Length: 325
Image 1 (cartoon, rainbow, N blue to C red):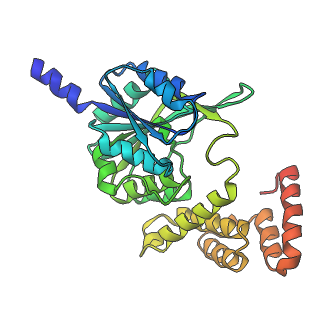
Image 2: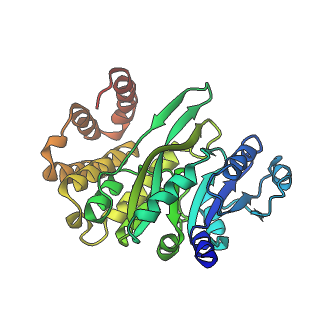
Image 3: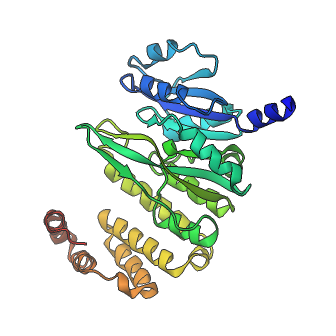
């Protein structure tokens, strides 16, 4: 009986990986939220990416034997920090936590319960969470894929990433098999990981209970780097859509929606000829995607560059004011 209990504890060991960089005001709360988990089979790996504020001092206060601190000499980005933690992890499961997010006490337990009854090909379980803003506003964020595996799921993930890694539990075997997070990306690394997991046949399962709090604030990595993030999205979708037979493998409605998104990204980055060519492909697959907003964007994209850029700025203001889709 004792051996069976020990085996279960070992098989359910979760490696919580907290990544941090210059977040002295938040990282302590993140660590406390992991220490408060009702699931007790935990190791906690904190990866500090060369912080220069008070973060190292805060980390030194923690003496719990389950906590390991890894201090990197250079900040190579969030994906690299996550991969460093994964390489040191010993758990069957991996749970990433950004330094400004907080877990509910039952977060890991709820997701581990899903794995107990799910297929052995379940690579990740993801949960709902609350967005929290500086003024105290708290909004529930519920985003669920209708499929759990196969071409339908691949198509859904290609259209949009609905999973936040701070509120997911990953099977380490799956993450290692696909090579971890892609360090070329600063903001799309998680989306790209979900795509590779599903492409390799791993399933994604949803856990519907609220699992924690996602802070929204101006010091987040993506804030102020939106143009760079859009360029990353362009690179990611281009790479995936050029995979042989990918569009033929996923349902036509998902293929059309992905092409529409890529066309919009091309438009946002002033690749106007490419935008129109991509929109044409989307509309051939699903003509009902035509909308007043798309007609306006298409028309603007046909004008000379010197004329179109000021008009696009004006259109964006009107679009926001009148909610033009």
